[in-house]
Image (cartoon, rainbow over all chains, first blue to last red; front, side):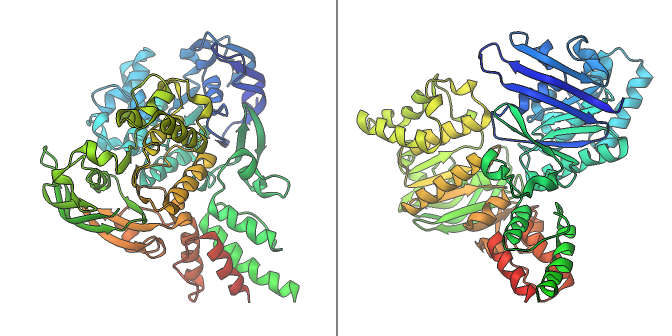
Length: 291
Length: 273
């Protein structure tokens, strides 16, 4: 099966509210995709993430879930959380909420220990996770002494030690300074490229996240309103920045404004070197064709 | 209302020297952004603006009041302080009580409190949340409640620690609009932020700090395009500036000090001709 995530007619309401937090979601995700989810606060992004790793329905039992979510062949309603968490790793906004041990190494070992894996296997997994997020030098440190960016890398490593095929990250850089955010996003991109892990990330800083994205989802009022390549964002009839409250990176705003003035470009760049190359080769040629 | 910082040193009781000979003058009605890496001393500095911290050496004057001789309560009427983490200032059971707490404590007239509250909750899009517990809200919403509880006091000087962190695009724009409006009313605004795109767009005066010192102080356009300052403060240039540098690499006549989209567009169209 090509699709690592399959979602059919998904709807969920928390017990406290009759209004569904998310609704009418149908989605297939292929192995190795890098998916960015954007949208206003309160639009259902976090609820959606909880559906992917089985917290919904297993933990939020007062709520009502309709439809189905299948991750790597497991229907999340029919399999217990500990099975699902070996397929789907979840990283939250506040790393402190998922770190608890006295050293980084112990924290990363916690998940595999709980699965009752043999000692040698645990050791191998911890080493691999430390290497993947480049924190081997921090192994003896206490997580609470680390910077926010380092803590978030520890949180990612402790999830990776369960060897998930899918990584779901709910605003992992929201509490980080710019240097920390770039570090964390680089690590995540590496995981997708090298380990072929499927990445699903909720991120407000589109100027950083879209550089790696293969696909962008925009949620609004509990449902998906945009599901396409990021380049499609600036087509004339779609104006997500205004309508759905998604902040367009200034690079994209610039290209949009140039297009409004009658310029056209072969593609819409999400990184600086490509943008410069396009501007230098195509702004000039626009002149030669108009003369 | 101006703030004058004279040769300020601050050393925490633990022995960590957080500020080292900082001098700075913020004039009435100015809008400044203080930027720098984590641990540069930004938050320590702004905590001196309302007397939360008292200088180890040197002086901080708010107008002509030396913060050493004034109480935090006295300063609270003049200087509003919004923390980075809203949970440090929220403690009541509903959003409405939270917002009314300050003015009620200062015995402002009830109608005025009501009127000011209406204004800030409309401003910050909190109307539907008045009866909720602050702790049932999202982080972004709690942040707006904390901001509302300070704004309702009508402070002359507003200090904001990371106001846009964790906010989506619409809330960010609302916060920017609010800051602009408060600034136009003549209020002095000082904010600490990592959000360089936000600063590039609204262009306040920028003070850059590293290791307890001010290393640059000037117009956003000059500070944010200074590679040495950006490197020392671990900031990345605004996207537009990075693009200008990349173009200038290949076309040397292209200006390197561009920070806004509209300016970039003008320069590019000139390039075309």
